[in-house]
Length: 126
Image 1: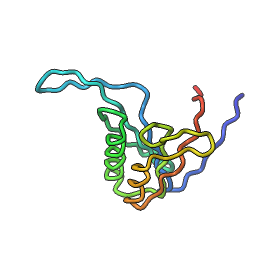
Image 2 (image 1 turned 90 degrees about the vertical axis):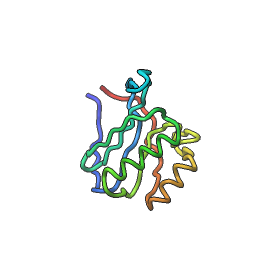
Image 3 (image 1 turned 60 degrees about the vertical axis):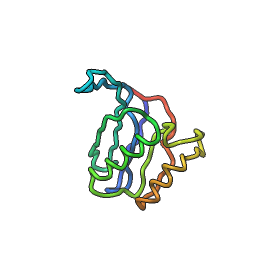
């Protein structure tokens, strides 16, 4: 038996953001061109209310725009936004003191929230 830890979340405390693993395909109606899209996912810790959006890339601009859209969807701002270790949010990954992307930190400041340290890297359990 593998030990697990139960986490209690306070309402409005944290918003967890990341990109899902597999890309989607989007077909442009006008040109018929098939584009690959990344799947952005944001989840509130306490309620598990989830926002999902397809974006063209995992680049910083698309990531921040998707985070902003998630905040509009929720109709408010959490106390902290917790990214996973994606490159758009973390410039230097480190197990104990990762360095956050300055633009992402500025985004959080603009909305009056904290860009919390990213989740620790680990191997998922099935």
